[in-house]
Amino acid sequence: MFSVHKKIALITGAASGIGLAVARRLASAGASIIAVDLNGSEALAATGADFRSADVSCEETMAALFAQIKQDYGQLDILINNAGIAVDEPELSQLSLSLFERVMRVNVEGVLLGLRYGAPLMAEGGRIINTASLAAFVTVPAYSAYAVSKAAVVKLSQQAAIELGPRGITVNAVCPGTTRTPMEPGDSGEAKLCQRATALGRIGEVADLAGVYHFLASPEAAYISGQAICVDGGWLHGAPAALLDLIEE
Ligand SMILES: NC(=O)c1ccc[n+]([C@@H]2O[C@H](COP(=O)([O-])OP(=O)(O)OC[C@H]3O[C@@H](n4cnc5c(N)ncnc54)[C@H](O)[C@@H]3O)[C@@H](O)[C@H]2O)c1
Image (tube, rainbow, N blue to C red; front, side):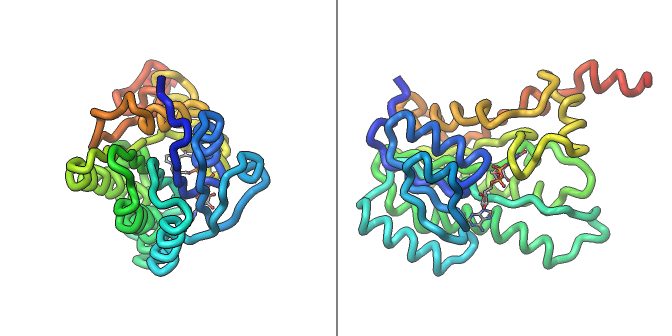
């Protein structure tokens, strides 16, 4: 069940956090991993992944990367567009266009380029998974560039699902809630809010996510496409007592 044995999986942002956890998970399930990131990491090297250094936001680099992958592997079975950034943002009234564009370049254009150059290499019945965020649906003040970028990733995933469906390729977005990684060490204001606002009363761990990617990459997920799957401990669906208690405090 859920076999990805001998499948070829390319994962961006694989040197750290969620991408690294997914690389480990798929490698341990027998997939061959092509790991793409700006720089490698010791932990990534330990997975045995084939590391390729690339900036996902640079079209020339992405075109060359996928051309090389085609030469080296022929085709891809699984493509995970996961690389992303979060930056300190001011509220909208202070948001500079340059900061907005910086976030868009990596989070949106990086996924777009992954789809643009990766989709032609996908085998029939392939699986594409894009990492969006719960921020596509639930946002907090001073988070607009990130939230807009992740809403765009959800929409790009739906668009790609429609266009690639005739080739039997599924495309889904995973939307993590606050998850402990180097991007979110777990002691931020958002992490504290998450503990109160989330039905399960805690932030997520990468182990909460890796299995979701594994499932979506597997044959058992063949009829799931165009979905935005929130792995958020229940945050999307309302305020638990722990949050309401704050009103009393
Ligand atoms: N951690 C969270 O709370 C959380 C929540 C929702 C969504 N996400 C999303 O999950 C994804 C992974 O984030 P993470 O938490 O594992 O963070 P992370 O910082 O640990 O990992 C992100 C990886 O992406 C790489 N990367 C960044 N810009 C790149 C570029 N231009 N080209 C290639 N690689 C690049 C980084 O080098 C890093 O290895 C991101 O898309 C992020 O937005 C994270």
